[in-house]
Amino acid sequence: MLRSVFLQILFWWCISVTLLEAIPVRKTIRSYRMDPVSQEIQDQLVDFLSELDMPNGGIDWNFDLLPFEDMCKVVGGTPRLQAPHYLILRAEKLNGCLQNSGFLGEMAVLWLTAQGIATCWQGGLELENDYDGVLPYIAAVGFGYSDEPFYTPGDNRKPSPLAKMAFGDISGYKAGLIDAMGRAPSFRDEFPVRIYSEQYRIHFFRKKPAIQLPQLSYMACIDVGVAAAHLNVAAQDAGYGVRYEKQQPEPVYRKKHKYQFTALLSSYQV
Image (cartoon, rainbow, N blue to C red; front, side):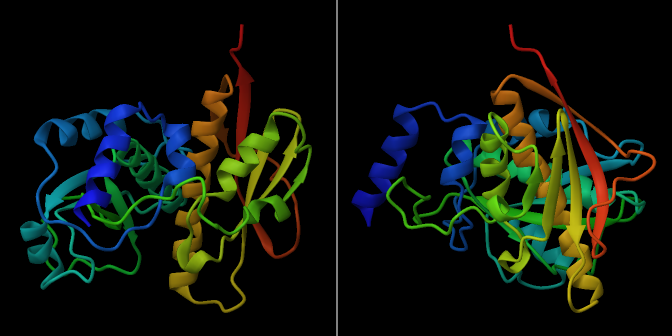
């Protein structure tokens, strides 16, 4: 065990991992050592997240970083996932706030992974004793150091689901974008995201769940934002800026797929 931990620390110390390189090694990890992440790393995470632009503009949002002890207080007990830190995502309850929170949370996940820090999305978590005067709670991500390894190139992983769920102009550089989106985590691994690509537009759709339960729709909206975060990272690495907008009239894909937003790619390659 100690040898495994040493090799993992050595791996992250010896190389500089970018956000794009964090995508294939990111892994949902559910066991943590309770020693804290340094305040310097926490401050850098806050700075990184504070500069992000959300896919759906005009919605107030923010976040908190809570240690384990404070998280126990707001959930009214011991969280199912016990981690030294939690990223609490908050937003004004408007259409698009869930997608924004998924985007924000997954950008945090990739940033933390690049620092060698483990993460786990928290679905279905409720805050029973939330603080007064704050924006409504949307979702949470637990994070900290773990003895569990990240994915390595030799791991046998499932193929990218988005490869069968992306349509239109998906050749050339867009194949890399699609692969990055297909590696995004999703609630129960159901991956409800569908995209239709044309020229420099990528339209995001959400497949409606077969069983109409509020929690499934809630998490599916967050999953759309998670996939958008992976697109954002891959596009920027390929030399493309990304801007999001809601197009009118709304693009139509299939009857059971609800339009979410469109990513507009602009080249700033020299």
